[in-house]
Image (cartoon, rainbow, N blue to C red; front, side, top):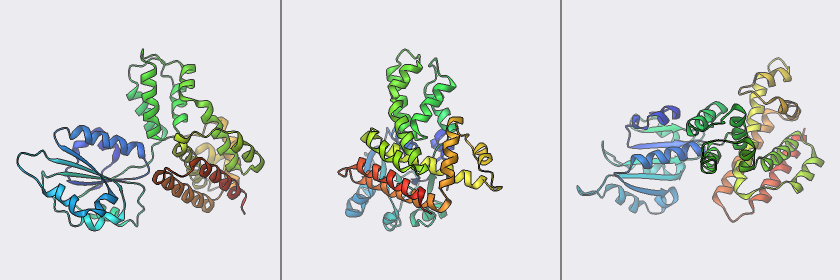
Length: 330
């Protein structure tokens, strides 16, 4: 059965299956689901696996699942970094009703993915697509988590969302900062901007925009001057991806050839101060060029997440140069 993620957030207990797959680009949403699973598994033995560990030691995995006595707690399993390689093992599983729960978590799985198709077509398995958030869903999260705080104006909501770049994982981190810092539950905008370090993010936004416009001299200068914080590399990639996806939406709307009109119609709306920059970017890019760059950012994100020893900042800077060059390519 395919579940809607927003419905599961409201009532996770609607899941009846013993084997459930969560997949998609929304890392923050998947982390939220993992926290819900842990809270719901207080009376269970909780066991974490990586897919590679399961594949390397299949016998140990099956022993953990099938070794059960009347005096043991039920078990809840989470298997991370799942892809199509695990499917042969999953097909061997024989789980009974009221047996252990196994939750699988994966990155993006395209429509050709065998493990995704296996779950979507099965009547006895659960699958939960975790798509990217938008401004509306993130505003609801902020309002809910900062309930009881004074000073939560639309301007402050926008500051928080702009700083997070529609990244729920980043948003959850920033909300934790806000709750800890403003312990008297009164939010001050000036202190908030210092807390969230929006100046550094503004610098990267300028760099990203100039690269997407294809301004080589400005991009080269900003690459040298802009401070890239190592812990924000995935956040930077998300900012780039969001702008590329926004351009794709504009191209889809732009059927009559009026680019400015398409920019005004796109939802959620583009901030007025960003519209001239977006207009210049749209003139430099095409659907094919955007898809090529989205593939590069996706591969770079996988590389960063799987290899912590590489110099991530050099790779981000190289990516920005590649963006600038592709913007100018015919």
